[in-house]
Each structure stands twice: as C-alpha cells, then as structure tokens.
Image (tube, rainbow, N blue to C red):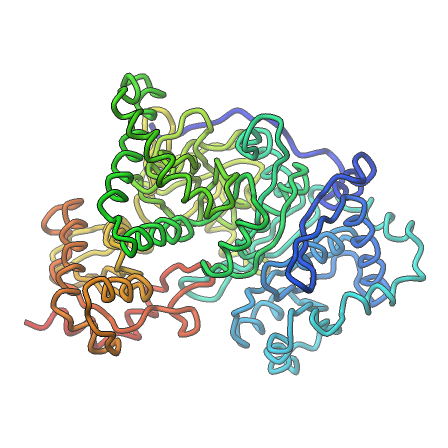
Length: 608
C-alpha cells in the first residue's frame, strides 16, 4: 500500500482560539478540577476550572499592561511546570505568539531563536536562565521585557494589570481565529540551525480534538472514571504542548513534573495517580529496567524473566486474536498470566501510580517486545508518530486493533503517502503553516499542503505505518551498500547495559558502531557479579562487559545482511550529552557532531 486516508471524526471550530476553552470550561463546570499544582511543601492541591480561568485572566491583564500586544512573540524558557501552562493560555488569550525555548539551551541557541522570532519579551524560570539571556541581550534590541518566574514575576504582572477591565482582554481574545499563529516551535536541529515551525490555533485544535474523539476511552482506568494525567514531557516540545492542549480541551485533570529521572518521577506518579500518560520510549525502558534490576537484587531474576515471557506471549496471543489469526491465550497461558499479574505486573503498575491502564508513546520507535510486555502487564501502550511540523501525532495505533512494532494508522482526517523513494508524506489539518523567515525550507517541505517529512517508511495492507529510517541518515559504504542505521541502533540499545549506539560507515569499507553504557545498569551489573567499581576509562576495557555488549551487537546483526552488519565496535567511557552538543533537547543523536567529536575513535575502527 502506498497511501492510506483515515476519514475525519471532527473539524476545527470555524471561529475562536485555544484560550476560549479555558473560559467556556469555567463557565460550564466552574468547580471541576482542571489541574493539579504542587504547593511549597510539595503537596498536590486541586485547581478548579474557575480558579484557572481567573489566573489566566489576571495574567493576561498584566501582560497587556506591561506592553505585550496582539501578534507579539514572547519566549518561554522554563521546565515543565504549572506556570508554563498559565503563561501559554494568558498569551493566547491576548493573541500573542509563544516561542518555547528548551531550558538547557546555550546562549547562542537562545540568541538565534529570539533573534529569528523577533521576540519582544521573554519569561525565564530562574536566575541561571536570566543570565543566559543577559549574555546575548545586547544583540537583541527588540527584546523589551524579561520576567523571572522564581523572582516573583507572576505577582508583579498580576499587580501591574489589576486596573485593566475584563472586556479589554476579551476583545483581544475574540480577535483570535483558527488561522492565527499560536506558537513558533524551533526544531531540535540534528543538522544546521533550528527552524521555526509556525503552528496555528487551528492546527492544535484539529490535533487535540482528533486525539480526544478517537482515543478518549483510553484516558480512563474504567468506564465513567475521572481521567487524569501527569505531564512530564518538555513543554518546549510539540508533544508536551499537544498533551497540555488536549487535556484542557478534553477536560482531563493534569499535573506537571519537571524532571524525567526516575527518582523524581516515580514518587509523583504514585502521589498524583494518573489514569494514563503520554511519554517517549525512554520512559518505558527506564520503568522496565528498574523493575528488572529490583528483581535481580532480590534474587528473583528467574521468576521475573519468566513473567516477561508470559506477558509477551499473552499480549502476542491477544493481538493475533484481534486480527483474526489466532484463538487467543490458551488456558495454561491465562493461568500463568493471572499468577504473575499478582506477583509481578501489579507491582509495576503500582510504581506508575496504580491506576494507569493505558499510555501513548511517541518521539522515537518503541521495540515491539517492550510494547507487548507492557500490554501483557496490564498497561496498553499506543505507539504513534509525528513531527513538530505535524503538530505532534500524525499516526497512532487505534485502541481496538494495536499492531505492535508499528506506529499505527493515520489519525482521523489525515492521509499518509509513501513517495517513490520511500519518504513519508502527510496531509491533514495538523500540518503546520511553514517555517518562519525561511521560504526556501518551507518550499522544500510543503508541497500543495503535503508535508514531506524526511522520514522513510512503509505501509502494510491495513494502512499501518512502520518507520524504516531517515533520508539524511542513510549510510552508503565504499562498496556501494546503502543501509538505514536506525533499526540496528535500536536493537543494540535493547540490551540493558547499553545507553546509546551510533552506527557509522559512510564511505567506509564496512559498518561499525560507537556504544555508550547505562550508568545505573552497569553499576547494578558490577554489584551483582562482585566486581569493583572502576573509573569509566578502565571499565570499558572489562572483558566480561565487552562480551555482554558484543552479544547485543550480534543480536542486532541478525536483522540485516552481512554487508549491513556491524563488523566492529568501540565502547566509550562517557555518554553523548546535550551539554556537549551531541544530543538534541529531545534526545536525538546529532550524528555529524558525534562523528566529529569522536573522529579519532571512528578512525581507529577502520585501522587494520
């Protein structure tokens, strides 16, 4: 199949903008809990729809009083927290355009985004962010305001705007249309300078309303229960923003968690008790690996691995039954599954708050076996695919017929087309408006409403999409063999000791790899074998450790022909990090930067 169209379920409203939902929500259901917010003692407290509306209105007045006008672009440099959502909706209320900036951005990255967007103001989280902006502010003459959240900016703006009449705000709000620009999101930029994606209010409305209409049943633990989610994705990324917008429009209570590490995230999952969440595969890998390490420490690695096998087999059998190619789990398998549900799976669900039964995954590909495991453990993960340019999800697995290992079908109202060269093209109401100040890039990407994604994929006979690589990442060896590194890298990363893998081989005689280690997993591995902790430079020379990593490489090589297989590899002492310019803020590898940084190591891979 070369093209698949999913009929629309909903359409964007003919008038209005995103902020209207806040005011409608408060009018229709003022006492309903709209958000959760942590107080100074770290306790969650409820924020009703009416309370949130009042805060949005008060902040919108303050922004107007401080000189922000309709169409102005305002940057937000902040982690995922309640105040980001508040600023988003206050700015949208008065017709301003939000420019999200990753909180880890360098001074030069901040300069480029604020300069390119001609931002007139910026909200930063704390003093470090303020200092980052201060180092480039002399090159940003258009930047007139800088607010620091942790220095009392909110209260200052509330006080500044107290004299403004409500009607002034509502006049601005009524001027916003679906065609109005809601945000300019700068792509992570694996190559070259980030480009500003112009996303409209209508784009977000179409995306959020489609997700709500099609996947609303998965938001609940059981029919009729109140839906709640914990938002821990970066709000500087389109995926996190889409979750925020969908939660407000779908009247799903949600809270914010600014840290992605397990030590911070797991306690908040337990306290907030979401009914579902949206994440990237990295989170599911972390939860799974933490459960495996805990079982090994308690001397239960054998039973845990058996529980994994049963969960995978159980979900695999259910999938086959859903597609009419199998009878479903056997009686024996059902009994085993019931046993492990009590002793293993329930504990994993409890670590995620106890109420989670569904989750959505995007951002990168999830291993089929990992998806099957979570489904067998009682948490159905619906994998999807999208870009900033498609306002997040363009495809996703439907609730009733998940096909693990794929990113699902086109969401309703969207068409997926596979071009002759294998590139994925998208069409629908979620396709962005173009790149800010970059007509050349816009013309290369948008073709009569079709978005050329730069990703490679294939559609099966039922319209389910599988991502096979990225056009710009295709390697061609000196022998003329073309291959996509993604599947190999993902399979190597499946090994619990591996953190990252980058495959190299362009214009080289064969394919090789640079591999980094998962610090927590390696520490656990050493402890379980009674080995001493060593400095990273010595650790990578450990024979047993290298043997373990070699197993991961051998397993990955079973996916490809001999000419495409990894012939040799090098274990690196340190992971690729965003701070060193080797990862994008969304954790994608910057291939060119990594190969340049490790040029000597790459060269050594090809020395006879």
